[in-house]
Length: 247
Length: 230
Image 1 (cartoon, rainbow over the protein chains, first blue to last red):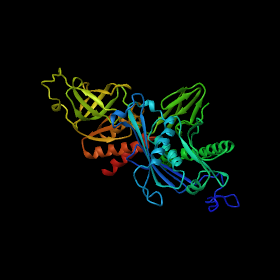
Image 2: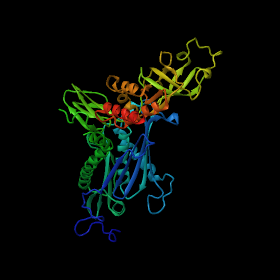
Image 3: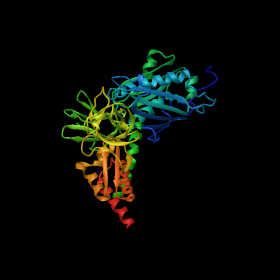
Image 4: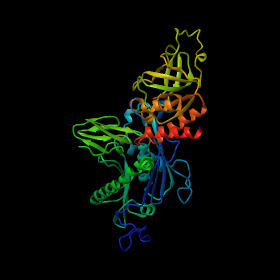
C-alpha cells in the first residue's frame, strides 16, 4: 500500500516539505465568541477548530449532578463541511470516543472539586479537518477553559507523533495519518510533567515508542509557548493601547 | 525566589514563586512551589503570592450583597437568579417585616416573577444553595435605574482601592450606583444623560481593568464628555 504514496522524499522531507521533527504553522486566538464564557480558535496547518466553554453553570438534567465536584462535559464534533466528502452531522462512533478521550485529558487539569453540583461544558467544533484534530482540539479547549476563568492546575497541550516510511515524524497531517504505519497522540501538562492522554494506533517497537513519546513531549512544549502567548495577547493588546497613548 | 514582575500577566500552571511564601487567591501550592491557577495579574506582597483573576464566574460568599431576579414563587418563599451556578433562595421570613402566615399572605403581592432585588447572602456552603435576606436597611426591591452586567472579577476594580473609583464615579456622574458582588451594577441618576455617562465609564473600567492609572483616566474621560455636552 505504501509503495504508491511516498511520504518521505529523497532529501528526508515530508509531503508538505517539513522536516521530521517540525510542527505545522500554528495560529491561536482567545476570546473569539462573546456569548460563551470562554472561547478559543486554533489553526494548525490546514486543521481549523473553534472551541467554546460554558461554566461552571447550573447542571441540567439535575440528576447528573455530582455532590462533590463539577461535571465536565465535552463534545467533539466535526462540521459536515469539514472534510471533502460530506460528514453526517450526527455524532459518529469516532466522535463519541474523541469526546470521551478529550474530556479525560482535560479533567486532571481542572479544579473540579471547587464547584460541586455544577457543570462545565466544552464544545469543540472542527471546521476543517486535516489530521491531528483531537490534539489541536485539546490544545484549544485548554485555552478556552483558561479564558473562561476556570481554575486549573496547568494548561493542557497535545501533539501527535507518527511513523511514516519508517521515520518518526511530529504532528501528522491527514495523509500521513492515513497512509503511515503508526500514530501516537499525546496530551501533556507542561509545568507538572504529566501525560493525560496517550493513545497508539499501528505498530512501533518499544524503542521507537519511547522516542515517539519524547518527540511528542518536545512538540507539546513548543506549542505550549504559543498557547501562553495567545492567552496573554488578548490583554496585552489593550494594555499597550491605553498605556502607550498616555506617553 | 520570585519568577515574575509585580502585575505581570500569568497563565494557569506557571510557576510564580519558590520558597517560604503563602499561596493567596487563585494560586496553589505544591511543596514549596506556588503556581497560578487562573489567568490574571500576579501580585507579590510581603510573603503572600496571589493572582488577580481577569475572568471568573460568581461563586456566592456569605455577607456579599448581590442583585438578583425572582425566578419562581413557592409556598415558603422565592427562588432567585443571582448570576451564579447556584440558584439562591429567599425565604418569606427573610423578606417580610411581620410574622409570615401561609394562609393569609399572598407572596406574589410582595415580590413577583421578574422583580429585581438587592439582597445579602446569609448562608452558603458546598452542600446548600445560597440563602438571601432583604430585611436589612438598604436592601429590598429595586424600582428604578438601569442594570448592567459585568464580569464578577472586575467588581473590585469598579469599587477601587478604599472605594476610590466608585466614589469618583458617583461624584462625577451624580448617579446612585449600587454594586452587586455578583457582577450586576445598578445605576440610577437624575437624567438619562448622567446614566449614560456612568455606564460608559463602567464599560471602560471593565475593558481596561488590568492596566495602571485607571482612576485618573476614567475621571479625565468623564470630564471630557461633560465638557463636550456643555
